[in-house]
Amino acid sequence: MIQLLKISLFICIILTSVVLNATPLNQIAAIVNDDVITTIELEQQVDSIKKQLRTQQTRLPPEKILRKQVLEREIVKQIQLQLAQSTGIRVDDSELSSTLNRIADQNQLSLREFRRMLEKDGFSFTQFRNNVRAEMILARLRQREVTNRITISDQEIGNFLSTQAIQGNTNEEYKISHILISVPEAANASTIDKIKLRAESVLARIENGENFQQVAISSSDGQKALEGGNLGWRKSGQLPTLFSTIVTQMENGEHSELIRSSSGFHIIILDDKRISEKHVITQTNARHILLHPNELNTELDIITRLRQLRQRIIEGADFAELAKSHSEDRSSAVLGGDLGWVNPGQMVPQFEMTMNSLNPGDVSEPFQSQFGWHIVQVLERRNLDNSEEFAKNNARKFIQQRKIEEMTEAFLRQIREEAFVDIKLSL
Image (tube, rainbow, N blue to C red; front, side, top):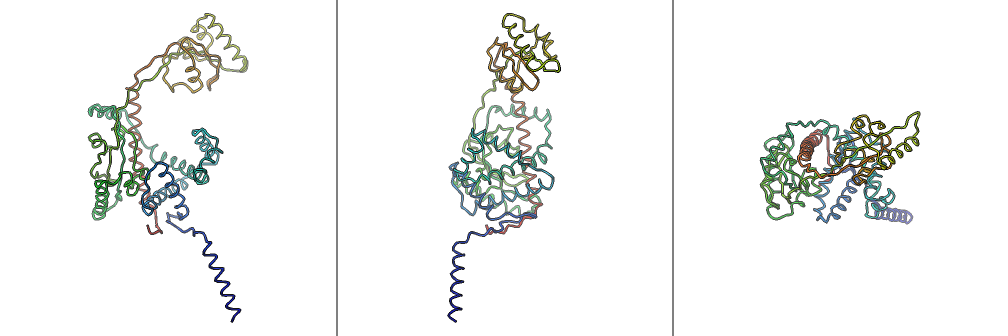
């Protein structure tokens, strides 16, 4: 009997030790189709969002609300990744490594230094790497499902510019934030009424003085919820069609009433507005001579020949005549090598960099581009008000961005409603 008591006591001590030293179980947070999101995965994402919000000096919402928002974002992300995988979208290790190196370069760091910086700030590099791969896959999925299906006509661009001209605010830009309380596509009248009551309660919180960004983080169903609903700076034509006429009439700090659309109920706030400046570019009038290595002339032969031509030009020979008789760029050779007025970004980087380093009248040393070996002379520079062409290009971008946002929202809502989702946590 005493021996049995000793054994029982020993077992109790062992069990107590196990309980006291146990790590939290990795439970299922949600089932998403044939896959799961675990509690550990959820907590990793919650911790990451917390660190981002603290870095932005944004007050954290209540823990329960934040976890609910992050879980919903992870569910939609998981659905997209499953769709991408089932339709053959992949990102291999070499592509991922190139992207990570590019991110490090943009921060003026080596990849090793960038990794140390992340870990010093409390971020897991492995998690960061996985997140980057996932974002690359999602970008390709949305490119295929949304962006590649968008067309923009010249008439749409013309209508866009005409509307801006009529409104008289072609140079005004608006910084807005947005809250969406979404409505399922097949919702009945009773469901819509309940969702409207929720939207009205969210609006009441804002009217009672709660910070808009905080309310967006805790309550919005929009894609930018965890960024406080911030949609950034936009011209009126870049705004969702539903908002454009409302925003242009608002004052800084003013919020809208509920705005109904097929996707749900919206609330927007005008954070700021500004007048954009005219778009002036520096054009360069340049001419060049191009030569290609071939079976008879090596690269060294070409460089030597171009140096000789350059010396002749410096000593007074006519550049145009030499270009006509020597340049292998036949389209410009007949014009004496003249390339006309060149806009920024029009030439390949190697050519533009060399051209921009010259003063008017200077002739470059021989240099290489993807087309061969060149010498280039800058004749003149001028500043040009490119606002009209710039406005057309921006109009195309704005229309495209607006369509992308509207179609992406519809796409995500559709795949979310079609997916099997079983949330296991009590949120």
